[in-house]
Length: 187
Image: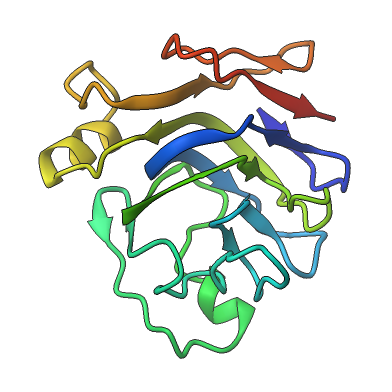
């Protein structure tokens, strides 16, 4: 699904319980309309700037609040907490090419997640999103590389939600894992 970076775009999930990991196929556009783009937001996020208030979103790729590991195409990113500029932080994620991003934590959390936008529909991210997996377990190396290489049913059974995101019409995004965690697409 293509997102142009308009403030009214994004995908919003229902509250999903006991999340340990999120995997997604993304293609980030080289040019971003928002000064603070958000790939993922909620109680844990992957954003271009510090969160505030109740959100404990990470400062782009800063660890310690929720996500402990971030993998890009199956490889663990060497992320430092003291990166200070958005260009340095977002520079770790490729532009104009498909990539698999996997975020993982040992501390489960429950929350509604916002993809390609902030929870108040600001900070949109321009690009494309193809598949999103939300896991109730941490994935081991074999499982992470299997997902990054293309899902083939080898992954753990603790799938909280799975969204296949394709161009089309309508705003309902069905949970393909069968857990009835249907999401909403906003255009």
